[in-house]
Amino acid sequence: MTTHMIDNSQRTAAKVAGVAGLLTFAIVVFSNFVLLNPLIVSGNVAATAQNVVAHETQFRITVVCFLTYSLGVVVMLSALYVILKPINPGLALVGALSRLVFALLWLLSTLNMLGALRLLSNAKYLQVFEPDRLQALAKLHLGANFDAYYVGLPFLGLAATICAWLWFKSNYIPKALAIVGVVSSAWCVLCAFIFLIFPHFNEIVNDWWFDFPMALFELILSFWLLFKGLGPKIENTIET
Image (tube, rainbow, N blue to C red; front, side, top):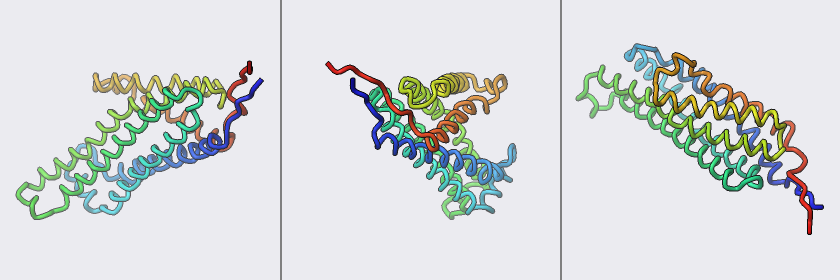
């Protein structure tokens, strides 16, 4: 009988995934709710533009945080691929590539933000436009972040669903936790597609509930990987 033990690269990757998961969660919460959201005045384009210009450094720090978040997602998907590849290389690759698409779409948000900042920069070549039009265009760029996120969300949900299924098959983490991951991630994919087709769906199901269960699962998983690590083995096979 041969026991296929978890190797050191997988154990190291588990620690990396745990750290990356916790850091990316902290970064995305801080950048959105502490830095960016206070600058956005709902229904008031002019006030939003004035806030962005008055707090340009804060706005640019948000851009850097978004870039760091994207980098953290790439680190995490790489670590998850190393961990889950022995279970099913094909599915692990699909999960990694799906999460990469989400990271790239998040990068698109940084370009939208820099575009908004350029529109509000008072550059000479922009003076042919009225200030209110520039402010409206800048708000359009910021609003595009919302679209980029919800286009990327099905890819993130798909990646999380695949990874949760591989976690379930692997016995690396408690099966109950893996099942929660499968259900919450599949729910996120379903909500994201419904919302893209029916934009008023969030009046029935609050959009916070689209991805919050999945985010909570990945947060708990990150703590588990960092402090508990992986299970002792994959499987036993009989040598003939």
